[in-house]
Each structure stands twice: as structure tokens, then as C-alpha cells.
Image 1 (cartoon, rainbow over the protein chains, first blue to last red):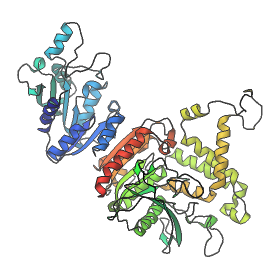
Image 2 (cartoon, rainbow over the protein chains, first blue to last red; image 1 turned 180 degrees about the vertical axis):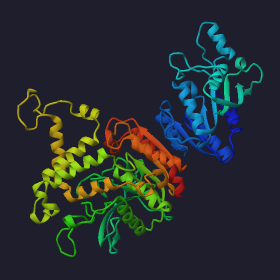
Image 3 (cartoon, rainbow over the protein chains, first blue to last red; image 1 turned 135 degrees about the horizontal axis):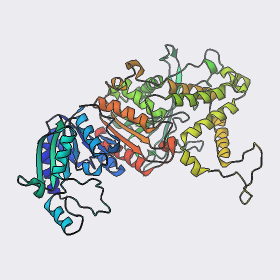
Image 4 (tube, rainbow over the protein chains, first blue to last red; image 1 turned 90 degrees about the horizontal axis):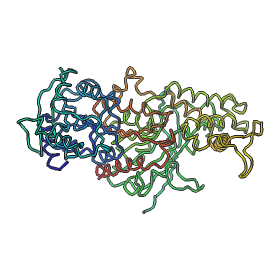
Length: 197
Length: 377
């Protein structure tokens, strides 16, 4: 993913984060978003990450990071203990999809969930031509992808209503630009603000 | 690489130490070793707390040719870099490496304290360590760091002196011992106390040492410090035989398996240098440590006043101080929104992993200390 695309993603999320609040980033990677939001909004941040190298990268950035597997749930975190819980482009890498979504809205007063949209036209075109898509938002081959659940905007919204997650806001992006029209066709990255019903 | 700049101290404290048990103890001596240089602001001091059988001799090679117990961690260019930090190692009160302990002569009688040496707690040690900090003029430690029982001391520092410690580094530790853990300690103590040479703790007068008890205590300890996989890999079912000899049973109770040979060797070595009363004392301090007890057994409440940032590390195959026990510490810190980083290192070496050289583990500590350097200037 390009640097600009990351920025667009970050600033869309930052618009929903209140200054001086608390934020938990699940699957925080090397902590680049946490570093950004901490500076942009003076937010007290924590990250959760499974990889040794990424945890080390977070520690080097002076970030508070907890090493654990998200598949095991969020037992370390109390109900409604964070103003914002972020699950940024991580949902598609988790097997326990419903469980993690329930955990996210249990721990966060408000939550941000983002994922690459499999229904983007370029992905549809790749499948139409007989191949799994390899694009900017899905940059892996089918045999080495960390993604275990690919989903579309429509899929997420129907699952959300099924498991009692309220959608408060939505921003869909492609190449850093907001997509307003036919989002499920022209958007490659969907970002939702959600909460408990 | 510059040198370690080792300095050795015997600090005499004349004022009696008020103990958690309600009594006082003193005067007493603490053996201290330091590395590196204290900066002008006295802001770069790091206290390294030892576990059961270690001492003030943390790094480098001493006059007796012994390498420090955490030499792979502390030194110039090492994760705890003595080119930047002033590192203090203290032999805890009651231990047997030069600080006042059960084998020291009681000034009132001239004979070793033995069984009359008071029961000490982790909190008692921390209080005595604070006087060592005062001696060096250290108002606030950059970090207090330890593994296992040493980690408990780091936790106690954060609770007892919140304004005197910047970072608590707690490795392979726990906020209290489980029943299983206390049980292991009790077996070890029982082995020592039932040795006929123990003489109710006053064996010094009889010029004997309860060696067989100490040996068994060390053997049981050693098993719990290793993982099952680690033992399988190190020893398997290999028989102790001269090279080239047939791997046949000898149908005897002599050393048959490699693992027996290892345990007997470790036991013998330990019985030669460690004091039996110190073993009892330190295992009891481990059992008693339970900082949540005064807070309705709620560790989150116990941690409310902590100001230090925490780095907590556990090892996947450590079953004596399992990762779950470290997660309890992390959760209590998170409940208070205290600053904490937690790493669970996937290592095969059980509890002993905290003393071993593991690239991921050492990189993490190194990175944490590099980040701390900026805070000390």
C-alpha cells in the first residue's frame, strides 16, 4: 500500500478520534498509526500485536504494546475500557470473525473497523479473468496471503446487523480518494465507525 | 568497547531495618557491585535484582574467576549498556554472598545467627535496597529490573516507591506464587529441614552442612526451571556410559541416565556453595510475596499508585512462572491505564530462558534501554 493511501486511511480514522481520549489498536503492526494518532490527537494509546519484529518496532517507538494473538479474544481488556478500539485492515486475517467483532465492541465505546473490499471492480475483473486478484489493497498471491477471510462491503454490513453491531459512520476509499457512488464497486478500502447496538 | 568499570562495596548500615514481620534487624552489611558511571544528574542508575541463588556479582569476571550471573545482559554494548547506565547489583539481606545472612555471626553472641535470623520479605529487601540508592545519591532509578524473584522486587519497587523508579522491568515473574509453586518450595525446604545435618538451622556449630537436603532442593528446583522439551532434547533417555561403551542397563541405583548425572552434578555443586538457611529464607520470601493481599486481592487496586512504565516479558515454555501469570500483571497495569509493553517470547528453555542469550529477548531489552537513554539526559 502506498504512503498516500496510508495517510488517507489514517486521517479518515483520526476524524473520529476525540483529542485526549484512549485508543486501542488491534493488530497495530509496527505502530505507525499509533505514532500518528498519538501526535495528531494527544491520545493515550495501546497496541496489540502478535509478531516479534513488530512488537520490537513498537517498543523502539516508545509505544505501549501487548504481544498476543487476537484469535484468543481480549481477556486483558475490561468492558468499555477504551474510548476507541481500532481494528484496521486486520479483520480479514482473523479466523474468529464474529468473536473478534463482539470483543471489539465490548471493549471499545466506539470502534473503527476497516478492511480491503473484495468487491472492488479490479478484484471482480481478476476473478472474471480466472485469477485471484493481486492488487494494491490485496497485494498477496492466493498461496502466501495472510488474509483468511475475504469480504465485501455488503458482506460486512449484513454480518454487523446479524451480530448486533451498529454502524455509525462509513468512509470508503480508493487511491486515497473518498468514493461516494457505488462504493461496493469502486471502493477498495472500507472504514466503519461502529458501536454496540 | 570501553571497560565495565566494576566497583565492589561492603555497605554497613547501623540503623536497624524495620521488617514486615514487625521486628527490626540490624546493624547489617550489604555487598554491592556497580558497573559503569553515575552521571552528574544521577539519573542513569539501574538496579538489577537477583533471584534465588544469585548475588551482587551481575557482570564481568570477579577475583575468584566467576562470571556474573547476568553477564550476557549487562555490560558495555550489551542490552543493559554500561556505557550509558550505572548498574547496581546488591546481594540481598539474608543471602550468602557477603551480605549479612544466617551464616554471619550475631554480634550479640558471636556465633552465626542460624535459625534466629529473621524471616524476610520482598518488601524488606526493597526497603534495604532504597538505602543503597540513598548511599549513591540516587533519588530515582532509571529502571529497576529483575527476573523471577527479581521481577517481584521490581514490582514491589513500583508500589513502595512510585516516585523513585522510572521503569520496572519484570521478566518471567508473577504477582504471587501459585499453590503448585509454593508446593515445590515446600518440598525443597522439607528436604533441607529433614536432613540430620540441619540441626534446626544451627548446623554451623556442628561444623556440618545439610548437603543431601540442599542437593535434593536444588534438583527439584532445576527440574522446574527447564521445560519438558528442553530436558528431552538435552538428555532424552541417554544412558551415562563412557564413549564407545555399550548402552546397556547395569541394573543398579547408581547413575544410569544422563539426566540423573546432570541433576546430581547440579545438586553437588549447589550444596558446596549455597547456605541452607538462606535457601529456606528466600523460598519463604517468594511464598509470601502477594502485593494484592492488602487490596482485597485485587491487583488492579494494588497497582493504582504506580507511576513507573512497565516492560513485562514472559517465555512460552516457562511453566514455573507461566505467561498467564505475567498477563495478570499486564492486565492490572492496563486496568489503571499505566504504561506497559508486554512481550511473550516463544523460547524452548522454560524458566531458565530469562538468563539465556535469546536474540529476540535481548533485542527487546536493548531497544527499551536505548529509548530510556533519552530520558536520562
